[in-house]
Amino acid sequence: MSISAEQTQSLLNAAQAAAENAYAPYSDFPVGAALLTASGALFTGVNVENASFGLTLCAERTALVKAVSEGHRDFQAIAVWASRRPHGSVTPCGACRQVLAEFLSPHTPVVMTDESNGQLRILTVTELLPEAFGPAVRP
Ligand code: THU
Image 1 (cartoon, rainbow, N blue to C red):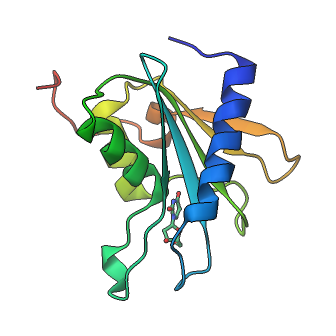
Image 2: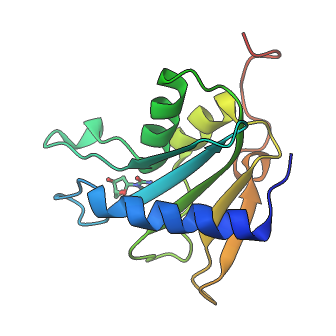
């Protein structure tokens, strides 16, 4: 399933808007994510940090857990946005890649901003996590 250029841009806009709600007092690095379900529903997420730093939830996982907990299992795309991009595009961390790969099929687009030109950058789940470990068939 592919989505239009307009849909990808609006997904990134939704991720940017969501980042307003990020709770990132320790890193000062607000992140927003927006996840589009197969049925067209939109779930956003933000990073939610904790004084015990390792308990931080990333924006991508927040969005995914919100959607799955509301009964969604099939997804078209996810976008991630951050206010600053110190190393180029903000790409999902390793833990998020594994968690995304549990639910998003390998060719699902992951939309990001491109630091070099401010435009969209899109990689697939399998490009971000090749040869992912996972169930042969989703349970
Ligand atoms: N973070 C995300 O929420 N998503 C990413 O893709 C990159 C990192 C958060 C985790 C932490 O709250 C802050 O950004 C700095 O690592």
